[in-house]
Image 1: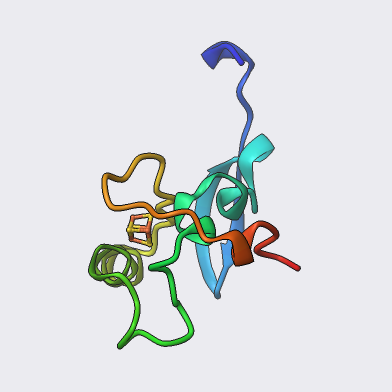
Image 2: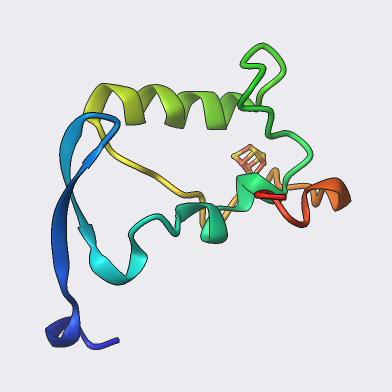
Length: 85
Ligand code: SF4
């Protein structure tokens, strides 16, 4: 999509007003490597990947959403092929 065709919107995410590209709103899980990775345990921060924990801390601090596009430590988890399932 060309930059001139992109549309942005403002909405409440966890009670905070944030901006997002409209076509990508709510899509971060579909693109983030973590949701398919052996090391991702967001429900158990003690076992969770240190990179993911660091990103989560920054996300909370800055009220941002940061999907991981590339990661040298990624290991495919066959049990997470459908992260929303
Ligand atoms: S190793 Fe990389 S892809 Fe896996 S959970 Fe950590 S940051 Fe995400």
